[in-house]
Image 1 (cartoon, rainbow, N blue to C red):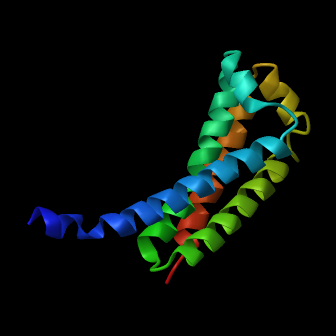
Image 2: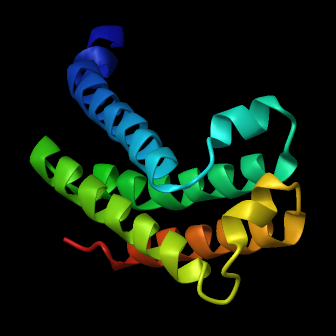
Image 3: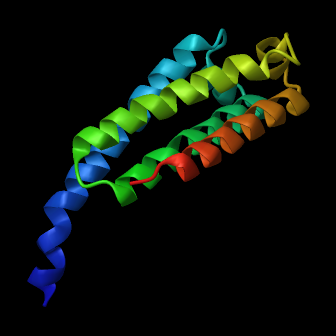
Amino acid sequence: MILQSLAGLPTYLAYFSTAFAIVIVYLIVYTRITPDDEFALIRSNVPGAAIALGLSLLGFTLPVTSVVAHTENLIDCMIWGVIALIVQVIVYFAARIPVPNLPQRIAAGDLAPAIWLGSASLAAGALSAASISY
């Protein structure tokens, strides 16, 4: 019975590893397009940086988890991971339209712009996840 339960372990490891790698790529790309070093801000105890980046990460992982749950191959997982990344980059720049000095305000410790950016990222991720259908 245990061996039967573990029969799916190779597939689990393949999808988890792929999704984890996609998340790392996302974090690298996202933190490169923003003008500030989010991780340095987080280490400096700037809550807004953690809020914005954390919610953005959740917004990114929602469509990735959706595709992992609905697809039968790793190529689709990678393709949709790239699409989810593009969506989050677009949201980042779109969120700056009503708040042009958004990155500077987040770096300065303002929470409202961070919550705005994080919420926009999370909303876009939820819409993106729901739009993935097979």
